[in-house]
Structure formats: C-alpha cells, structure tokens
Length: 87
Image (cartoon, rainbow, N blue to C red):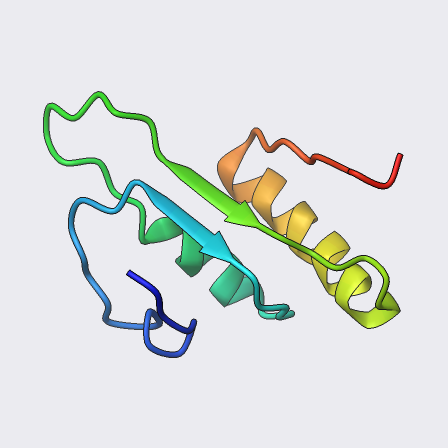
C-alpha cells in the first residue's frame, strides 16, 4: 500500500500491516503516536512489525522535526533504532 499520511490518518484501520515507511516530515505529537499505531498485531500473530522513517537531515527544519519526533517515539514506544548513514 502506498499512501499519504492524510489518507492513512484518523480512522484508518487496515489489518495485517507489518511495515510502514514514512518519507514525510511532520511535527505533530499526535501523528507521531498515531502513524506507528497503525501497525497492530492480530491475535496469535508472531511476525515482527516495523515503522521506518527516512529523514533528509540536510534540511535543518526537517532534521529539527525528526529530533522532536524521536523524543515522542522513545516516550511512547520505548526502543527505537536510528541508522545514520552520514557517519
């Protein structure tokens, strides 16, 4: 499924999604919790699921928004991994 955050926003309930890849920058704390929240395991499901953000850190505003979201991710989801390909 390829969609925008507006299309996958409030009210979207699609079962069986195991991976979301986000390319859109945003600042909303609500969206930061809702977007990965679209990933729901079915009863008895053992498959892992992933929420991935690809962030262009070359744009100061985009990187600043990501740093804000990262704090919300850690608070709400505990563990996150960041892969920085610039180092």
